[in-house]
Image (cartoon, rainbow, N blue to C red; front, side, top):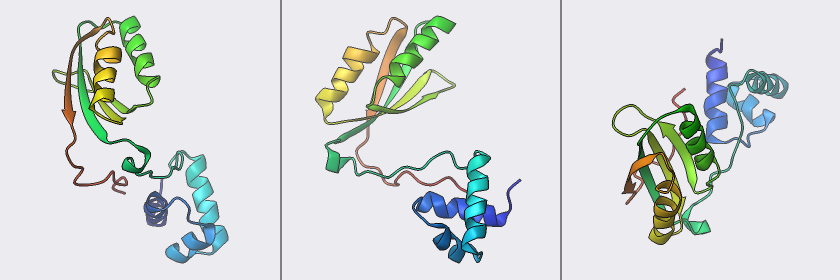
Length: 151
């Protein structure tokens, strides 16, 4: 179980993973050692699974974000595993979800331009033997940035 202080700590490190134990202690009204131990305990228990920096996609040449729905023609353990391996090998696919409803998968793709997106869809996804249909939606504007989890 986590308490309200743990929740406050989790909110703080989601906003800024570089906070030191001293910084956390000041925010939580704890000593630096107490804050550090709490953070270590939450990491060891799997509440904190990693840290990463937020990189501006435009600054590194990623001008197109798209969500791609994939409908499979058939399902079997082999085809599902094969498609899963394909998805994991593509760096441009930054997230993949299995869905209920008409589509089986929803992929989040970041790429340089529409030509690169076309290559991913027509050169990688559609040639997979189990893929029946692909539908893409290109993001025009991201009104809300990726946010921290609501803790």
